[in-house]
Amino acid sequence: MTEPVPGQTPEPAVADDATATPTDGPEPAAANPQELFGSLSLAAIEADIDRLMSDKMSELDGMLAGLEDLVQRLEGEITNLEPPPDEADTPKG
Image 1: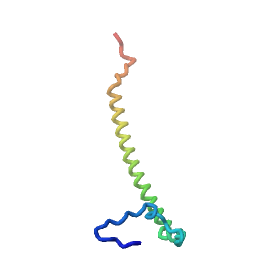
Image 2 (image 1 turned 90 degrees about the horizontal axis):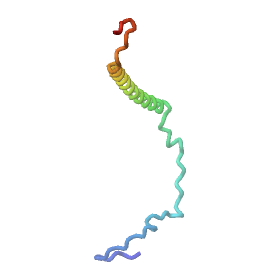
Image 3 (image 1 turned 180 degrees about the vertical axis):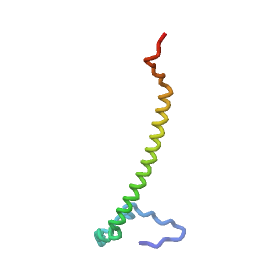
Image 4 (image 1 turned 60 degrees about the vertical axis):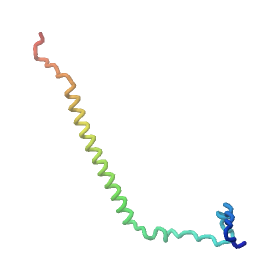
């Protein structure tokens, strides 16, 4: 390889050369699952699941309360729109 000359721009590297991986280099060792997941405990996983389920149940409770309010409002509007029932014992005339 030649030394760069002052005032001259160096030639750009070819993309294949820049991204090529050495074929004679050592292969990376396979990851040990115990090392990857060793810090996780069943108790921590269960706590995370319980927390997520609690959050989702709170969301569902809020949605259910909103639906109950909507049903009550709609029932009230329907009741106001219905004509009063005719009483059978009142004479018509």
